Structures are given as structure tokens and as C-alpha cells.
Length: 131
Image (cartoon, rainbow, N blue to C red; front, side, top):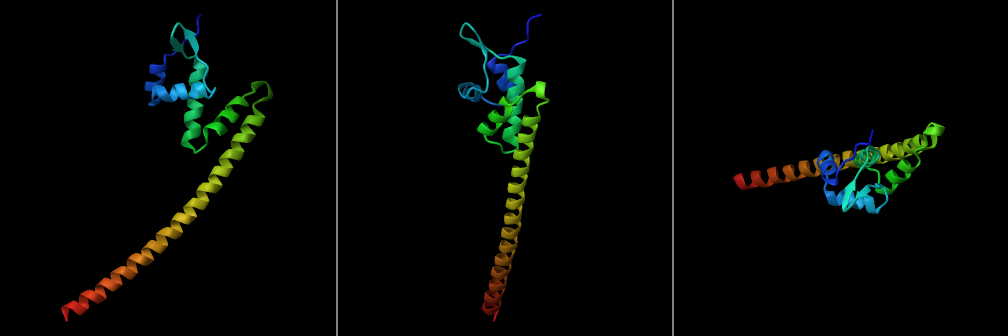
């Protein structure tokens, strides 16, 4: 039974990305479509790789990080190295986000303080104008 393939347009619609993005991933070696004349035909494996690329992007991984992890796929070894690398990336990203969250909380506190001081200054000015 022949393997099902997908056109670039089908993948673009399915993943809500542009065909240019898919060609970019191909140029970077992340996707390797078959050629039927001038037409690119993507396999289910390409579709899975595209899913992993998009998932990596959503969690803040660079394209190079995603590519490195995808290329570590080794089911014969239980994908241990791949999973450990992914866990390292996830933990590093979580630490980065927690630090950013702390920075944002501090910034919000400082903005609240500035807002309060401005409001107090306006109240003083308004009271003087009323007198």
C-alpha cells in the first residue's frame, strides 16, 4: 500500500502557516519532501516533524534546538538521549519564564507605586485649584 503524502498547501492549511515557512524548514533540512516533477510531496514523517517544530516554537525553543532534538530520535535506544535533552530544555525554559515572571511582578509593583504617587500629586494640585 503506497504511503499517503501531503502537498505543501495541505500542510500549510493544516498547521496554519505559510508555504514559505514550510519551504524555509525544508531549506534548513528539517523537512525532506519527495519530488514528483515540480511538486513537493510530504510524508507522514514530515508531518510529524512539522508538528514537533511547531510545538517547540510554542514553548519557546529555537529552530536549532528543535532540530537537534528531532535529529536525536532513536527508538532502538528508547529515545533516552532525546528525552533527556528535551527535559533539559524544558527546565531551562521554565527557569527563564519564572525569572521573567518575577521581573514582571516587580515591574507591576513599581508601576502601582508610580501610579499612586501621580494620583496623590494630582489630588494635591486639584485641591489647591479648588481653594
